[in-house]
Image: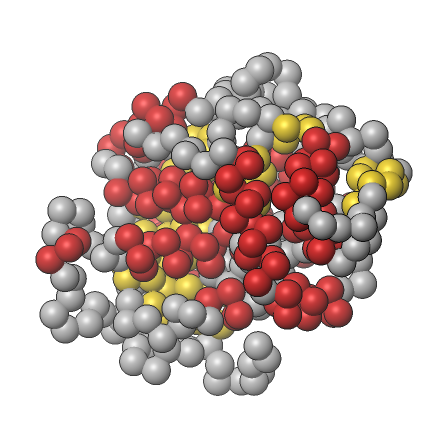
Length: 366
Ligand code: NAD
């Protein structure tokens, strides 16, 4: 959905960024049991954040400001069905814009910083510059903004990629950090920078390390939607190397529930903590390809092997114990069930992914 280049920061007709307030009569009785918060979600037009926002609007009384600079990965269509929601505002802006961040941060209780350059292969093939400025410097700008305007909590969406290949089964939060791609290294930079602001300035920082997400609205550059869209198109599924690399696959709705739990849990127990958001089960990419072919069903697709990805991580399997102990959250969706829902969404939203593929030169990664 194209935006004009000027005067497009504020898309919600009912609210400005400053003076942001909950609407009259709000919250409804349904939400009395939990505290209502004003939540800034960055990267709000991307895959995970748009699903998190939809979940928060449907399941909590929180008011949400979605902030996104709308890179190639940001898509306002991802929020189209909730854009007019009375508790949602959208701001077209960049987390590297210190003045804008200062303005926004002053009006919220919670920040969920998920804005990022998120594509491993892009960081390898096109260079890490944007990854450094958004994933590290953007995080630093937000952290400095909350030094001046304290918030109740700052949730940084880091990544399991910071660990590198599994040295233990499962990988808990004390696993060594051995990032293997420029993307992963910039996520580790933002992750450790956030931790340093907890230690140095006693800021209420919570660091989340999600494992591989999949689900509706994921850019087809990532492996599960790439396989699904290839299968739906009758094209071969492209597998890097022999496909033995395995990941811990997390359905995005489960991730959204985890973020809700992290917003609601007492900050005294969470500040300064790192938590995995994982399932505790790993499945190889080769097996994922077979599961996608089975889920899509009537397809002429086969599998082809392409050269192994540089900086490949062999195995990821996350420990789920700390997140369960701190918040009670555990993933509920099996991979087969999540994949079925994901395939159904891509089947029903062909125009969404065909439009992205039409604009995309380089669709090949995991
Ligand atoms: P995504 O690429 O779908 O979305 C990222 C969003 O951030 C896009 O909408 C983009 O426009 C926006 N953005 C990029 N640079 C920005 C900037 N400078 N200012 C404001 N907005 C900007 O990514 P995703 O898969 O939804 O991932 C979200 C977060 O979760 C990222 O931090 C990513 O590193 C992390 N993560 C993702 C996964 C996964 O499997 N997808 C796993 C672990 C962690």
